Length: 343
Image 1 (cartoon, rainbow, N blue to C red):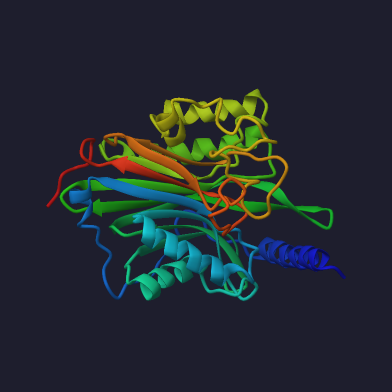
Image 2: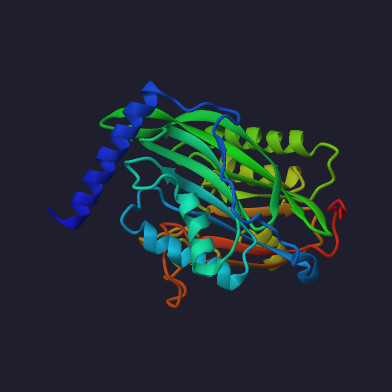
């Protein structure tokens, strides 16, 4: 049996076990699975007031990449340390015996501590699976102290097919409220919307995620970051799918890529000829057709200073693939905005 066939068979078996087990024991919604890992050294980002900016990364870790994971997490930790990333939004963090890790987001946090002496706070919100066997989660790593964290379940969609049977997958949105010394509070939201679903189904999830933001931020006046793997392709989709993009604007959230470039429709517009804004098809594996489905949105910051995709070797041979997604990194202005000043 060829290596690729073995890999696909192993993935099918892994998904089959997960789907059957998850149908028997689903995870608890609305915060019951929000996991906080205590730090020996408290996270702090006191230097940000002097720097005047916040650096944020979003990255889908690719849950089924088991053998490659330790090396990839080391590469990610080295990048975070070298680039001065302050907050990381992670999708497809995994845990359980079938994944080979208790919590891959915690493994990344530990790599940052062990390899670079960096203290990051971590919040993990399990989306689906069976604890101890296989779970998939969204997570937020923060060099700033987390004052509060919450999560909300999103509508479940039957998007996983195994042996002719379709299974519902849990999805969620996780929030971490951060304290930046001498600047104030910032709210960060991370989500992973359905992949194998219709535009209407994805809309239901996005509407719930934005409602969660609205409920938490009502009257708060804090700057907000919203991002993750939205599975929203502005160019390969129908009008109903493209209309979802407008929901972020209605919520006052600005796409970091369009803010920096002044464009939306031209970004990753030719799937067969990827540009620097495509996030899938440019990492591992590379594909003939590329898409932009990973996003970072922001509101009430002083501005969006920089945007770039990372871990995309198809476009930049000097970079290393760490997932089947490229990452998105932005730098946000903290010198003006609506952060609530605190000592």
